[in-house]
Length: 397
Ligand SMILES: Cc1ncc(COP(=O)(O)O)c(C=O)c1O
Image (cartoon, rainbow, N blue to C red; front, side):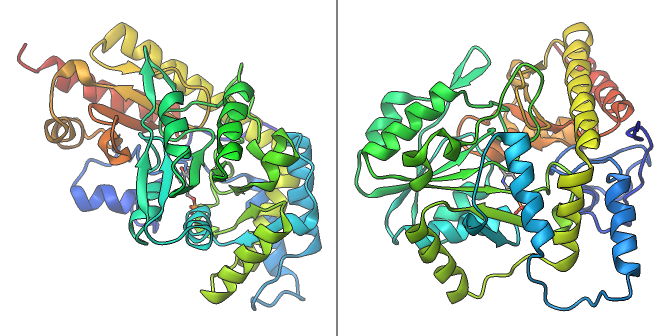
């Protein structure tokens, strides 16, 4: 089946956080302006999910009460991880959570003490910082090294930070938002060996693990082997992949029984939310019936990536898109414009109505960059880039 990834969907009054944030900045924008920021898609959900949910709601035995995970949902998660990620898990390892961000925030609380350090690698998805800072832990940053547009790990620094006994957890982003790296097996093993040698717990956020561009392969950190699995928790969900973030359905996979007990005890203590009945159903349908939809979305992201690269090379050389291996977020180097971050934001948002996310949101190393969401019809990107080109070409030299 071919899916419609080209229709324009007006979400101005549709309870979209991403749109509301843009409209809060400027409420009288022309109707063809869309946000290119928060990681949700300007694409219709897979029809199988919408029709499946409708059918589910029409079923006379459905009551929207408190939900437990149906067996069919658990089987769908196990099956999807096995077939799509070559990762065989046991049913008991699954801890259902209402969002990946709350799940890793809770894990930081459960497995570290106030005053301890949480290692992370900036520029990185900004709630990683809050997971440490808001709960009296420290952000222990190991900034990525920009090696001519390809980000690499600062191994010497990572080893030094991991060997400090007060740094007890590593919040890992694989694939890495915002720089788009899909970490290789060799990198994963090296990170894992350092963490194992220093007893650092790996909290691996793999929410973008399905969005892998041709030529790259995602490896689930925990799947490297038993030793790595025992000292890690993997967080993921169908929410990025199938655009279901509003349904708050995610899971943590915790192979080690002691870690699992500790984690679930903490979730009970704070009365953490669990997913909803519709979220379980949507995830089950996504993981069992929507794989061809996913394959076609990946093709679209790859086309959009190429479109942006070609456009910038041919018409907007002041902007350099960095090579993208995974996620649907493209990292644009705008440093040749020689503007500070306020000036850049004013240029992009205020003048060009190019509502991508300023790179400094993602911490040290993000200055001078923008992160662009490519999960939208190509025509949107074309219009947005043309507006940006017009504004940049009018700049005094
Ligand atoms: C790396 C990463 N983790 C987590 C999330 C959000 O997860 P959730 O909406 O399930 O809390 C995002 C959203 O962009 C993300 O990029």
